[in-house]
Structures are given as C-alpha cells and as structure tokens.
Length: 111
Length: 114
Image (spheres, rainbow over the protein chains, first blue to last red):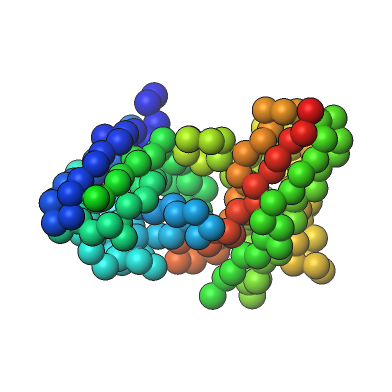
C-alpha cells in the first residue's frame, strides 16, 4: 500500500503558467481533499470530493480547478499561476469524511 | 458550524519533560476529535482519534488525549518528550454524520531543548 501519493514533489512556475498536481490513493477512499499550507495560516481547504465524478469548493477555491474522473485520483489545476499561489499543497483522502490520510505534499513556487 | 482553537502557537519543553498541548472546540454535540503530527517537510500523520466511549484515548508514539465534554477540550499529552517529537501538532474536529469536512486548528509548534 502506497497510501496517498502526490506528483510532483517540487515545482517552480512563472507567473501565468499552468500546471496540474496529481493526487493518487490506493485505499479505495470515497473522499478526497486538496489543502494549501502557508506559514501561520494552518491548513486551508481548496476543493474536495465526496466521490468519483463530484467536486465542491472549499475555503479558498479561487484560481484553482479540480477533477475526479477516477475514484483513486484527484487532480488540482492552476490555469494561470500567480505568486500568491506559492505554497505547499497537500492532498488527503478519507474513508468516511472524518479521519484523513495525507500525502507528502507538493512545494510550489511561482515567480 | 464547528471550530477549533489551539491557544498556543509555540511550546518549548526540555527533553524528558512532560507535555500538554491544548485544544478547545466548538460544536453542538459530541464531535469526532483528532490529533495529527507534521514533522518538518512531511505530510500530516494521525496520532489518535476520539469517536465515542472511553474519554482517554491512546495513540501512537506514546501520546494520549483526554476528551472533556464540560470544558470542550481535547488536550494532547505525553509523559516524557523525546527530541524526535519536535514537530507541528494539529487538532481537528469532525461532525458525526455531518459535512465531511473536518475543521483544523492553526497548529502548535513544539520545540524540544536537549
């Protein structure tokens, strides 16, 4: 069991570029989440999914889009990156919507 | 709506000393409660959880937490801290049968002095 994996681990973008972060889980969990973590701000929920084919907005969804075409994958897209999106991004999955299993994170820098 | 407060941003302890990290929650009924640990450069790992029953729960790495309904608290404790316990600790609350979005506290950074 790999648990929750995230690709890539690090990325540097220029302002205006686009990219997709991939999250994969092999635990057959229904719920998946994308968070960003910034110093002093804790974890902030970007988007989440309660099942294959569903997505919903979290606390800070602006500038991000997501898709959950397959149950095991949850993609986070940045269409036009901005320096304010420099952050560490964490994906998590959950069997029940409560206890969460986190990936190792993606460190993104936008210049 | 539920909320979580971790009053201490930083806590400094000496190795071998006891530890207590505070967590207070706001929720209309008995919530699900969690403590997670985040070591530098890593993701969050679940330390322990409370759903119901015995209010003193044991977790991994020698940690325990006690649910006190009267104080709306779920404080994390360890009798003797090791240098490897230096990390960020997050308390979270979930709603039984609720919104599927746990609420996290801002975190407490634990510093361990040799």
